[in-house]
Length: 296
Image 1 (spheres, rainbow, N blue to C red):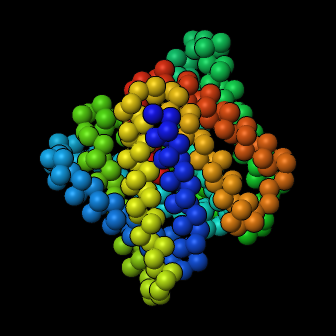
Image 2 (cartoon, rainbow, N blue to C red):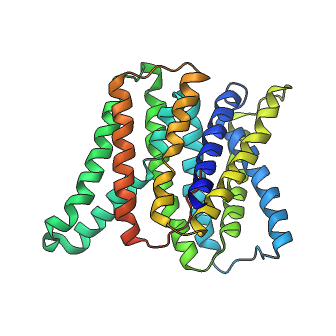
């Protein structure tokens, strides 16, 4: 059952990407972040009230940092979805596992220095190298001049997603329930999105284009709940690897809905990123056992 929950979560997140793609033609990324956060805040608030979970926290600054990196990852990802083919933007965001492996590798080298066993660090190094090689293969043959900024933002979304994941893991170890963490993350999204709207302006709502905003928030929350249920069911490593099925769903959407064309080398690069991410996830499980779900 945990595999089915994870597959459903991946499908929901990929479908959310489709909605963001359509909504981005009518609303800025800051607006989408804000409205996604509003839906999340109300949904999680009522869910915690029903379950009797308190939203009061003993570690507010940990939630602040988690919101900063998480909302940054979310905003840059939304910008990337608007500028790039959906499958490309999804793949760059899912590189978070590769970035985490890079952070673990860098930390081991810094703490152990020359005493770090080469054989012990070799799998991690190869996973990181393969991931970056996949990025080069995927972007170089397909990137248009007007997509350079989107590609950079997509890479940044993966980096900040890795930071956010590590912070979620720290909050989990501190005893914070997932619903409370998601609530403050959603509240941070509302704040940042509102500030961005004040600085850049807001678009006038036009029906039915404004209807895209509701499913974005609902799909995000439902996807997060499905992912949390999958992780809570056990078999963490299997579940974590199944998250990459989201790239497959995004690829299908890109081909069937948006008519995006990706050459063979681009698909090979995407596959290399998936393989490196799965390897990095396996290595990550040793360093961060029983880790919580990742946000999207």
